[in-house]
Amino acid sequence: MVNDMKLRRMIPILLALALLLCACGRNVKPTDTDATPTTPLLPDSITETAEVPSAVSSEPAATKPQETETAPAESDPIRGEIPADPAAKLGLSLDWTAQPLSENRYRITVILSLNSFSIFAGERSDGELSLGTRRITYHSDKIEYEGTKKTKIALTEYTFEYEFSGTGARSVPVSASWRFGGVYAGTPVDWLTLDGTILLDRTAR
Image (cartoon, rainbow, N blue to C red; front, side):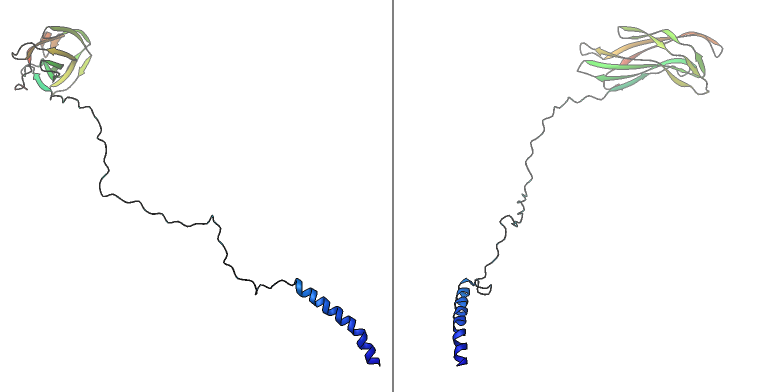
């Protein structure tokens, strides 16, 4: 009798428990083991590319030739000298250089020098130099040379242009003077002079 009463009391509890289990069974989600595995996707921004080297041509690249102006070649200058008297203790000499500018025109540079042993002289402003039909007066600086060896001391330098006419010998007459105005080696010397010719023919260098 007692057992029947306990059974009756438990039937409602068992029914309620069964209903609860049914309800719980409907809300249970599948576990990870039931899910279908998927492959993770890489972000679209991550990409790897290999640089393909450009083809190297075996032919040299064509270059545009540079345009340059070709200047006319200058002829070699002609050089010469009108020497001093080697026996004189004091004398004048002239070195010259002529640069051809055209067939008949030259640029000529002359250097007039004093050839002497030991000498002392003040400034001079009355020396004269004639080149063809051109005549100039030149200035020479103070000279102080003490030595036993004969030497050349430049007095003046002058550059001018000279043009020839005709086909004759190309020569320029030259004359020069320099005033010493004293006694040298026991001999009175007033003026030193030079006369000569600048020869511009190619055979006379």
